[in-house]
Structure formats: C-alpha cells, structure tokens
Image (tube, rainbow, N blue to C red):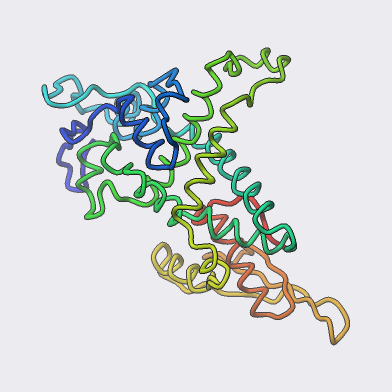
Length: 306
C-alpha cells in the first residue's frame, strides 16, 4: 500500500479492537431492547465482528493489490488482519432494511398513496440517515480499518459512506445470527426446501430497525422537508466531474390542462443518465435528478421513480 508520493503505508491500526458479546448486547440495548441477555443468544460472534471489517484490513485484498508491502510484521498492540470484510453482507442487509422500512411506512401511513410512501422511504435510506443510525449506535469506535484509511481524511472513522455500509452489514449479521438458533439458516441452497430461512431473524431485524426509526427520525419534519435533488446532484457533479448537470426535454404527453413532462439529465458525455416525469418541467427534473443520484449510489434505494 503506497500513497501518492510512493511512500509505503501500513494497515496496522492500534485503534482497532475486536467486538465482544457485551458490545453486541450494548448495541441492542441502545436500540431499545430490554433485558436483551435473557431473551437473545448470540450464536456466532464472528458474524457481528465481520460486519465492522473494512476491506483495507483484509489480508487477501492487501496481498492481491499491494505486492511490495510486508504485512507479516504485526505490532503487538494490533489485531490480526481479517480474511473477509463486510462487503458481501451489505447486499442482504440492504434488502432487510428496505423491506423493514417499507413495512413500517405501510402501517404508519395507511391512507397515503404509494408515491408518498416511496418518497418517504427514499428520504430514510439515503447515506446521511444510515450514517446517523450508525453514529447513534456507537459504530465509529468499533470499525476495523487500516491506519491509512483512518488518517487519510479529517472524518476518519466518521466517514458516512463507510458507516452506511457497516449499518447494512450489522443488520445482515443480526438476520443470519438469529436464524442460526434453531437451524433456520444454512448457506447451502438445497436447504431452501425447508422453507424456514427467515425464521426469528427477520422478526428481530424488523424490531431493531423500527426502534431505530422511532428513536432517530422526526417523521413530522421528514414529511414537511422537500429534498432539492437538483441541488444535491449539482453538488455531486461539481465535485466528481467539475461540471454542471444539463437537462433535456424528452417528451410532453396529455391534453393542455393535464400535461405530463418527461425530462432527462445528461451525463458528462452528453448521454441520457436518468429520466423523470411530472406535472411540470421542474417536478420532472427533480425526479430525474433523484434517479441519477440513485444511479451513482448516493441514495440507497432500488426503486426507480418514473
């Protein structure tokens, strides 16, 4: 691992420490679970530990990408490199989070249209909100990352992108661990015939996420807050590409009193990056901007709004 000047950098980080069972129970308690040690058993602590491991502290990644670094000379006050990071766990955790939030909003706002609930979900699952959850639960102090990554920027362990990923991975760890208790979960596909893969893991994950929502989200403010996605996309384009995003009118449908406008936002090469439709060009541009932010993974939501 080398920096821009060719100086070798080492992964060993004395601030890293292994997550303990007491840490996990403490997270459950922060999330509102009462008498957690008497009602929940931690079946596989390794799952929870892996949920905090950044790729910069994985031996395989370092060996594959950095041929000239010696990772054998570990200082005594540092923990060993891990074999796996949390990346694969993000996938399942993201889906659990998505379903749980949708289920919560479905019950909280039963008389609203699907579009309202979709917009609310989009506001919740964005990077800043998931990082806020992680901060609330004390995740920054539990991250296992290389010294280089921690010291690379001022924010270090408070990097929102990393905290977002760890939040999803920890949810995955809960889901898998709590399904191990009665043999509900097996990584082997042929066990699907048992039809019991969700088991208690889903119930506990859902309770965990709903508790977070009620402790960390001001829903009244969320309803009133209209996100300016054009402004967010503008900031992203200026940061990443040093240009201003351009919009193109793609279509106008409907009679004069019920026009539906379709606008496209163009990428840096002038190709259509994302589309959006609305009752005005302004609304259509906002939706196109939102879809573009989802494309760039700036907003974690799999729903493409048309």
